[in-house]
Length: 246
Ligand code: UDP
Image (cartoon, rainbow, N blue to C red; front, side, top):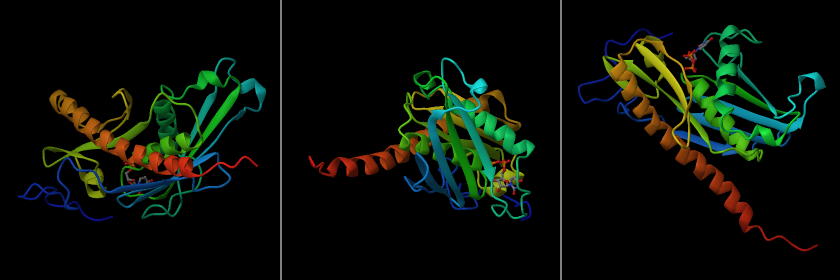
């Protein structure tokens, strides 16, 4: 691991990777990348690389786990053994179980689960390369995989983190900021600005916390534009295809 930098923000207000404090890392995504999944998305965000796959809605077995009035959402966040500097031991860890739980909860308010009683919707988010912000990257990819699978949702969910370095709030932490900064606050939001995930590691003042929410909202708004554009690109292309009567 690299050493703690002396300064995170230079005299011109630029961060170690050249970004402004309110700038997110470059993001690109593609949907429909896995033929066996009902929906899928490959996302790159800075140096993070994440693959998300959605299966369902399909009947849940064993039947005793079924919910009579809605579908069950299952979410599995996993870091590939080769995704980080030190190899990660394969299999669930306390960290991945916690991230899977809070990420599932980030989708529960938007997925119209009542339409599929007795069913299950499985979401898999595989981190192939990690560079800080993987839980939020995974949520952004998972949202696109859900949309690609045609799962009815009230709206999209997007996620990013705000942190604090050199006494200043910064949007979308890079690795040194995540490792050595004073705070890390990942959040997820719906298109209506409803917060569906907020976690906090470190310390900020109540005033800074309010500012962090506003910064995050702006980051999520930008990400949502990329998500919408990705969907538009795929589905307008489908509209262009002529449907024959044969
Ligand atoms: N990380 C790592 N090994 C681990 C967990 C995390 O090397 O077992 C790295 C990885 O680059 C990750 C970063 O530390 O993106 C920050 O991890 P954190 O737990 O804050 O979650 P994230 O920011 O990825 O959601």
